[in-house]
Amino acid sequence: MTAEARCCPYCGKQFVPSPFRPGQTVCSSRDCQRRRQTDFHRRKYRTDPEYRQVCRDSDGKWRALNPDYQRQYRQNHPDYVDRNRHTQGHRDRKRRLQNLVKNNLAFDLKTSSADVWLVGPELQDLVKNNLAISEVLVFQTVGSPGLCPGPSCKEHLPVLREGPGL
Image 1 (cartoon, one colour):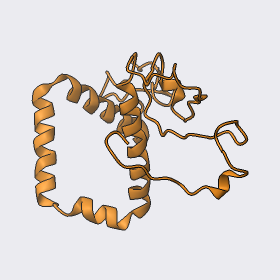
Image 2 (cartoon, helix red, strand yellow):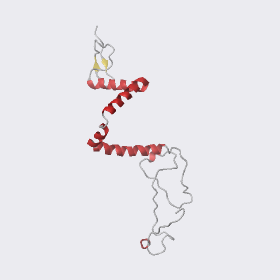
Image 3 (cartoon, helix red, strand yellow):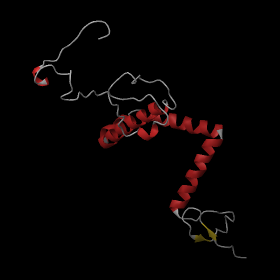
Image 4 (cartoon, one colour):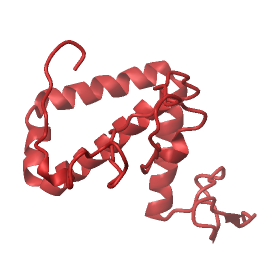
């Protein structure tokens, strides 16, 4: 009796199961078997608390035997450190933006005559937000009446004010 050919769920190729493993569902290629094992591990880790604890204990033992591994890896792979630092900053900004969903705390701009522009790469994440993590830039219109009493604004020295609330 010959076994019917089956289709591998990973590579899509036809294979005949081993006579020693009649329930075989994945072909014998190394890549497909590795993916099968990885999927099993992830599924088991997610669903079995005892298996998860054994994995954590094993990881802890390895880290105890190799305490300098992470430091040495970072020293030997500076591109990894730079990429991780950049992506961590992005993850931090994204986490802060997630906390802003439907936030109604806002700076009152009704009494201000200034135009307000919200500019940034994460604007699509600011759904229904009135609060944004931002830098405030104030632009003075050149030539507006009452702003520059003299012939040129460049002639005036900047004034530093001190006192409560300033």
